[in-house]
Image (cartoon, rainbow, N blue to C red; front, side, top):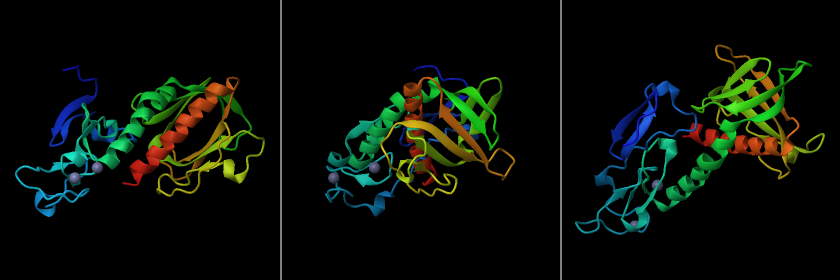
Length: 244
Ligand SMILES: [Zn+2]
Ligand SMILES: [Zn+2]
């Protein structure tokens, strides 16, 4: 078995082996809770194809949604990093599709976010901007901004995120708005033009006063657009995770 990284521990649940932060308060904001399994006595039939369970046709629980299925409808084992499983786990058709999409986020976008991008950052409504590198922290919990100064935003304290796109004054449809991620209200999403900035509102720790943070693409606009697109996808997952 591979070594357990610092600050993590292995736990065994009925669904499989998971590697979770030793302190639950440090779990990734993208993580999802394991579902309660539908009790055996409440599912005499497969919840997908209606096959009746017996000694031959055994039931299986989908590790992602906790519902009951026959072997045929729940045969795929797919990686489920959002629930911290070490190995791929059994999932129903619908869930395995979602998990496969998320695997792409972990394989590609998370790497882009950890790698960081160069931006011009404006905090609040100040006139003063600073060239900073913006990246996701290794535990996925913070956005680190580093320039002359260091600044960090806890992802779970972001209340809204707008991805700004090309054009001096973006049209309504080109603004991706996650109004109030904290309150899990999803407003709008649209536009396919290239991202060139992001407007965040967040509540700093210990404060209820929302602050604004604006990041705009610096010289490498292509890399910035890639980082912002990854951030956009991250916002969707955050939104879903909070919606559970
Ligand atoms: Zn079935
Ligand atoms: Zn499922």
